[in-house]
Length: 84
Image 1 (cartoon, rainbow, N blue to C red):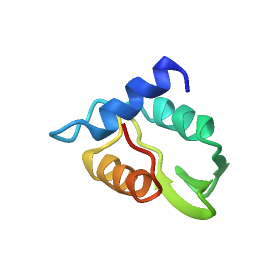
Image 2: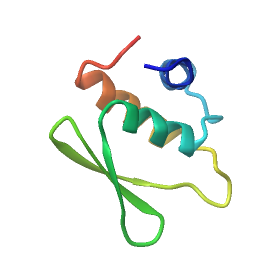
Image 3: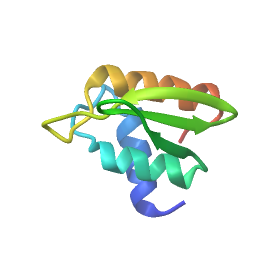
């Protein structure tokens, strides 16, 4: 895994939950983990990873991901063995 992806993963697992993580960095991390990302209606994206499907809302107008989405993503990654 590239250093940039590790830095994003560290931000996802930081306490308190960070609200300064760019969605594009999260998408890049997920792709590095083997995810397939598909565009859906509006600003929704479907992420296929760990033989599961999750739908996330791409943030706008700001590119920063909100704390709730980061917490949900952290829980999903942790449940599937992706941690620091």
